[in-house]
Length: 106
Image (cartoon, rainbow, N blue to C red; front, side):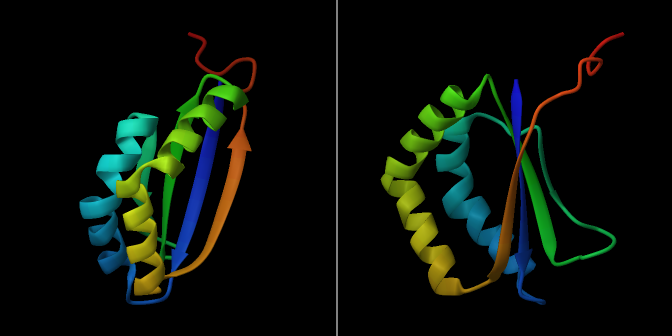
C-alpha cells in the first residue's frame, strides 16, 4: 500500500474559488479514476491558503495506471485548463508515503 500526499498552496484570497472550481470540474473526473481519497481537507490553522489530499494505491503500478487514465480524461484536461487560467495556485508538493509496519494493527 502507498499513499500519495499532495499539498497545494493558493495565492491568498483564492482558496475558496479554487476549491469551488475543483468541486465542479475536477472532483467528478478525479474520483472516477482514483476512487475516494483518504483525506481531502483545507488547512484551518497555520498556512490557511493550503489544502491537502491523500490518495491510496495498491502500489506504484496501480498509481501509475490510475493517474494515466486520469490524465487522458477530457473532463480532467478541461479542469486543468480552467485551473491554470484562473491562476489561483502558487505551489504544489507531492509526497509518496508507505505505512509503517505497525499501522493498522489492533
